[in-house]
Image 1 (cartoon, helix red, strand yellow):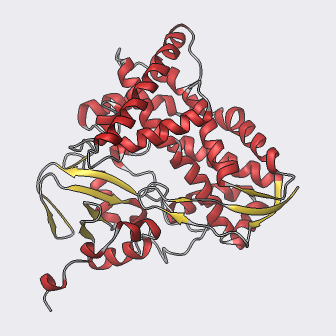
Image 2 (cartoon, helix red, strand yellow; image 1 turned 180 degrees about the vertical axis):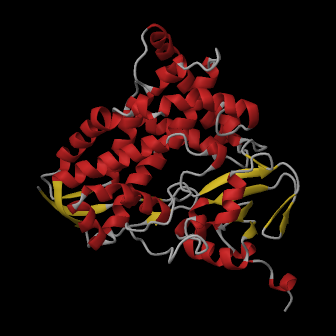
Image 3 (tube, rainbow, N blue to C red; image 1 turned 135 degrees about the horizontal axis):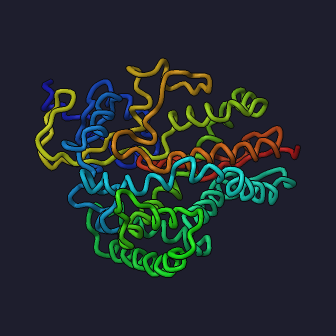
Length: 397
């Protein structure tokens, strides 16, 4: 049987199979079809470490400024949806807002008090859902405080959902776009008066830092601040709660390693890094070819939409020993869960701060932490992988 008759693996992949558990699919693609056209999602999936890294680090050929750019269409021109001089200018002005000297006090002064308040609310009950009761509200409340937004939690969550609808609207559905555009205008209206107040009275929020940051006399316009703030809402809310929830879930599924971490908090950082390698919260970097290109012997036409699959690169045996094994003592270099190259996640430090502080607070307050055997855990998603709940039992310290 010829290859043409057999068809490709990509043609047989369904979106539901990716959503349910993409890892067996990625494993097969890495070995047999490392650059694969998948009609179900209308993307070329690139699955090997070396190719994923190459795509992320070669913006001249694999651009983040896709056409259509769902991000630019929904948020206005922004960091994530741009390349070249414009991207470098925006990043150079925003990046200082996320440096340790600007946010180094967040773990103790911002994140820990919120985490403590959340844990106190369920500590005496002996059971909780660490997604709904902890990871999710921690992410919402920290993001709101860090960005400097003065909105109710559920309104921020609604903005996230509506903006994300636009960001993922590749089919250009006018109804979805209308929802996203309305949320986008709402954010603009909310941010205007906040910026007015911050003009004369700066504070330690990212909004203030973006407003006052100046590189060689150049500052962001108000429109640029608003556009990039929307990127931070979409990038910072779900990805961070998923980072925390997936780390906790993975440890709970490996009780021996959880016990080690709870006994020795210096293992929290390596546990987080291994958990996000093992289960990347953000699965892909989406790029578009600016010209014809070749990857692993496959010719991609100009204008091809490519998903560099970070979650797959993290499990490539060319890069890791026994990559499907979760091991907090693994010392094999980094992972690609925060991407790499010019679009390396600008909020990675903040995300790590939240996860580290959140886990420390939990482990100081609870003991005999374990999954509730009577409640099922469902993890779904390939672009954004997330547990629907993390049901646990425990005792108070």
